Image 1: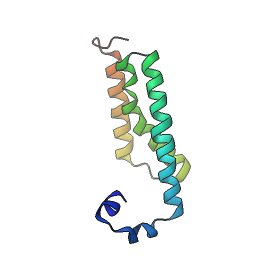
Image 2 (image 1 turned 180 degrees about the vertical axis):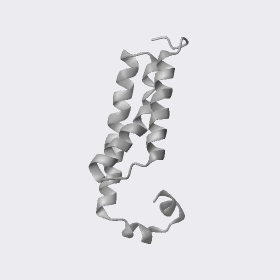
Image 3 (image 1 turned 30 degrees about the vertical axis):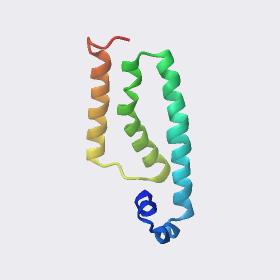
Length: 100
């Protein structure tokens, strides 16, 4: 979409469904504004090292929401990757260098 606008190809924008436009608006509102506000609030209350671990956990939440809300497939690779992500976050939090 952004590339189409940049290249001046506005005719292709009409092909985007209203459902897709609503999804984009939802991601802008909740994925950016609300999430950023929550992130900044947490930075005031929690140590930075703990707050940044959200970046590791967010993809797992997205996979769970995608699977439950819209029926996206969860493959063995997704399960293995999720396990590795959770294990990494636990390793970061339990690390002796981590100072809460």
